[in-house]
Amino acid sequence: MREYLPILLFLIVAAVFAGSTIGMSSLIVPRRRNARKDSAYECGVDPVGNARARFTIKFYLVAVVFILFDIEAVFLYPWAVTFRQLGLYGLVEMLLFIVILLVGYVYLLKKRAFEWD
Amino acid sequence: MSVRMPVLLPVDLWALGAVIALSVGLMVMLLLEWAPVRPGSPRGAILSLLTLAAAAGSVLYVRDVARSLFGGMFVHDGFTVFFTILFCAVAALAVLLSWDYARRTRIGQSEYYMLLLSATLGMILMAASNDLITIFLGLELMSLALYVLVGIRRARLESNEAALKYFLLGAFASGFLLYGIALLYGATGSTNLTRMAEFLAASPLQNNPLLIVGGLLLLTGFAFKIAAVPFHMWTPDAYEGAPTSVTAFMSAGAKAAGFAALLRVVLHALGGVHANWAPMLSAIAMLTMTVGNVTALLQINLKRMLAYSSIAHAGYLLVAVVAGGHEGASAALFYLAVYSVMNLGAFGVLTLLGRGQEERVTLSDVAGLGFRHPLLGVTLTVFMLSLGGIPPTAGFMAKVYLFGVALKAGWIPLVIVGVLNSVVSVFYYLRVTVAMYMEEPALEPVGISWAAPGVIALMVCLALTLWWGVQAHALLALALRSVQGLM
Image (cartoon, rainbow over all chains, first blue to last red):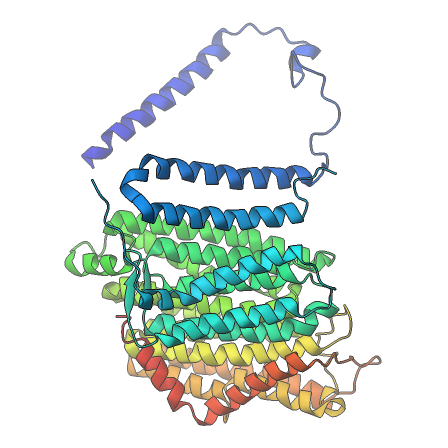
């Protein structure tokens, strides 16, 4: 269990640091409450209505598609780093991977997922 | 530094044929979105059948060779071949059942079949994996496709509810499974099933808490997928809300896939620590059989009733897993093949009930059906008798062999509970027959949507159910041969 000691130390330090900063600030903070200070965003726009409003599904679609192609790009990096070692085999594998994603892209294009209206 | 690359031989490509064929088929189907057809066109169904035939054919072509590919992650052996053929057959029958059902309930065409093929691909990967990571990949591919398929009738409220419940609970189960994989990796130092088995055989650490907790979490994930108590809550809702053709597909395919992966993990990787998990699995088996059967007694909706019946059948199958060894595994394979056929048949009859978008699947809907449509009545009766385990049907042979194996392995209380449960189950299976032949039809008798592909699928299921009931030895020998490489 000795090798877990740094993790335990790390946990203690994290707890002490978080506890002490929150505790200290709550001890020494000046308390002058007023309506403006108690609002959600003290120096921002006044909140209007409930945040749980319905908004269009297109945002989800864009977010999901973004994550998909973002991950594709992330996968390309480790391949690019070891490109020389992996050689032709790696190139073929990567091309297959990209082709599969490309099929998805073409499908999305046809389904008009990239058009906002 | 140069990395040694795996070289794929032609025989390896044939072994991977099912995976390749299905991947290409479903991608083609996505691209066909560019060439629209009229809504009722059978293009999606025909393309799916061709893809499934190619997948099954290529694996059958190299059925006698055993290969281990991708660094031992993917194995091609008798077990893989058996399940690949089973999944392709289940998917093909589901496609035939969907042919008209998808048209009349206005389910979209290409996406529906594309998802069906993705789920099949996931199932095949689960059965062919010899590594916890690839098992998880296959499981997720199957599950994600099924979540969407369950909710594919977007306008139906029940469908939405079913999909959401299935998705949320399924995501939890995947989390458990993944955590279990992580802990087992920590305990054994590998995610490869063969290497795990070697480690456990050589290690004195068989009671390592990490191993036990990891195993428990892993089993929780699998128990969810095979719908074993106490992780069965999603089953009735998902089965009822899903389009009936999808219910037929997932009740047979997803359960078989869950058991395929479970068999590989507990009999291959954890086979050496049988005493650690067998008592617990036997308790789950007893609970699953009893809860499934007792709850099914109270159901009026046939889809819900068959959902609880499928829970009970998961319990019977767990008896075979607990018995273990080559015989236990072969009993599970035999039972899964029989169960898939009779369950697809029972749900298949339900896909014919009702016209247009209506869903008529309650006991009062089938009242008097046996007289108005004698052939349909007889067909459903045979499937019900088979599910209940009454000779001369396949369900009887499967139960006899399964309980016989468990008895030989010494699990006597388990067999007693199983047999008692079979007796209980006969009540609700026969109640369907009673409703069909002895009750007055409802005021507005249910209309039947006859369609040739669906009828062909039902005839195949019926023929196999009766054939395996009297000539079981060929399938049994095949099942025994298929598990030789497992342990």
